[in-house]
Image 1 (cartoon, rainbow, N blue to C red):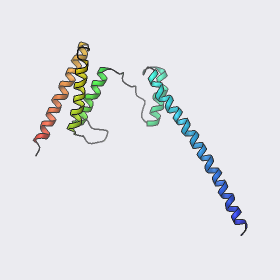
Image 2: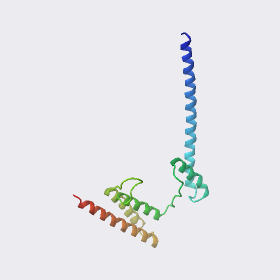
Image 3: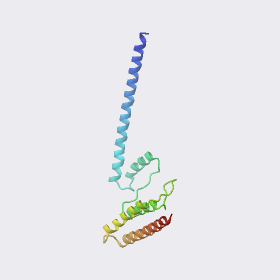
Image 4: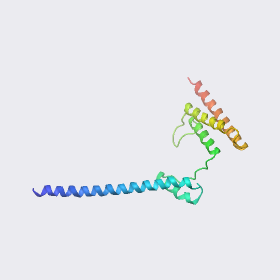
Amino acid sequence: MADEPKMSLHIDSDWKKQAQEEKRKLAEQEAARKKQEQTVTAAPMGVVAGSSAAAPARQAAAARGGARPQEMPSASLDTLVQSLVTQVLFYLGDIAGRGGEPVVNLDMAKHNLDTLTVVEEKTKGNLTDDEQHMLNAALYEARMRFIAVATRYAELP
């Protein structure tokens, strides 16, 4: 009976050592993960997206997310306009999320349409003919689609 308290103390100290060792290993793993994330997030900023130097960053990001690596589109007016139009169409219910039902949120659709209008106003006189034509067409199509959906919802009882 007198040996039992010593035995439990011995078990407790072994358990504490094991827990401390696991805690140390987890801290090292977390530090390594943070270092890798900093490297991955910093690399694309200084590297051309299509270059082979960007490939490890894309592969690491894909490994974390479980998706295939994809090339990022170049930053341009076309990409910005396309992104905003896509958001307008999403909130008008024309595009649904993966496996989801279409969403209709006229306020968010109008907000993104207004943002696209700000782009038009702020770039006036600074666009090439092709860029101006693309922006005008995108605005026209998005506005017409917004009017059609808003009218349909206004007519509902």
